Length: 167
Image 1 (cartoon, rainbow, N blue to C red):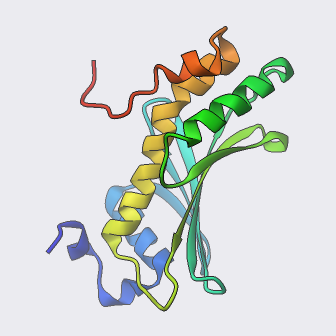
Image 2 (cartoon, rainbow, N blue to C red):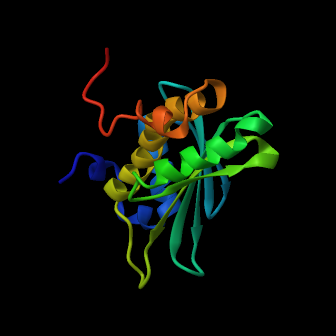
């Protein structure tokens, strides 16, 4: 039995219940916004990421939205969008977009559970980890693109494909 799965019981079949159990186990700050939604804060190396997970029984999808502040100068907006487009080419699950009115960069991910399939704690934990990992991986590139003089391609050059430790 997976170590993570031992913390989950049959009553945790609802995806948001599973997320709440994971958040409690990992000691993440969280708030159960509604029966079908939970909000969390997860500390990363670069900043604290705000995550919201919502379950839609209508289309049987668990949606994750991970946000962080990024307010580029107007003259850098086009470069940021190009950088986001190039970053999305490197990601297989999920995608970045912007919410300009809120001055946020957003990573979105949807886990389809059609046909009454139940997500495991490991799947949901991996989903959350993938979102935070993508934000951690590309945050420096986005910053370099909007705060420095690097082109989107140059900025993405610092986004490693996989990290194998810390310097």
